[in-house]
Length: 272
Ligand SMILES: Nc1ncnc2c1ncn2[C@@H]1O[C@H](COP(=O)(O)OP(=O)(O)O)[C@@H](O)[C@H]1O
Ligand SMILES: N[C@@H](CCC(=O)OP(=O)(O)O)C(=O)O
Image (cartoon, rainbow, N blue to C red):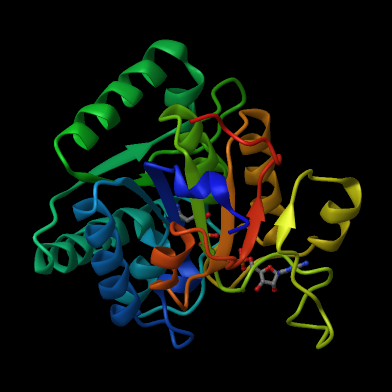
């Protein structure tokens, strides 16, 4: 089995993006959310410590207000996130309850993770939740995170947030769910002959060039932000699997070392 380190993973962060939570018609992808709740609850039952980093507040907010387009005005985006976040958590609570799994919510801003004392507090809260067998569900606090000149409160996107959370809790693995099977040598939505990278050991300028371009309809990141997240993980000797959020059940295979998606790791075998 090629992915030996993954077999040792105990603490796993899973990041799901808006494109995996919303249908192309702007409605909520209930079957994906249900499947996610099932798979993460099952991992928890099997002794893994699981943290979910979720996007979707703005997407769900748009759905509630029956709108198609993300507004440009910041205060409108804050309002949408505030409306959507509570509904998103309500959905998660209901879906996880089906599998007898307790969840909690943490809404983070960048100053919390940048400031050592608050980052320690966030870490303590997460560790306490994990020791209680709870799956913490994390999003950026979009309703209040607005950057000012001398006060940076935004992470930028949830790909980066998930890497920062992984660092904070010293996760063994980040599983990043996207709308695509992994990192390709060119954008597969444009080129039919694009080939997937099974493994990436370093974020080179060449990789950054081929990952360029904007992301999906309601989300923000694009492939470039996934590479930025991978870079944060590499700096902390951590690992990530980028895979498709359309096949959430494959998470169970990923933690069992199957070669699914793109595996970002520095190729250092851990002891033990
Ligand atoms: N080299 C590449 N390999 C894979 N996807 C790429 C690449 N370059 C650009 N992309 C684009 O990145 C998108 C995934 O990012 P994003 O839209 O942010 O997904 P999500 O919202 O699910 O996180 C893909 O659908 C694809 O259009
Ligand atoms: N925090 C925002 C999402 C930001 C984000 O990075 O979105 P995505 O690219 O879908 O992961 C929200 O909940 O709408």
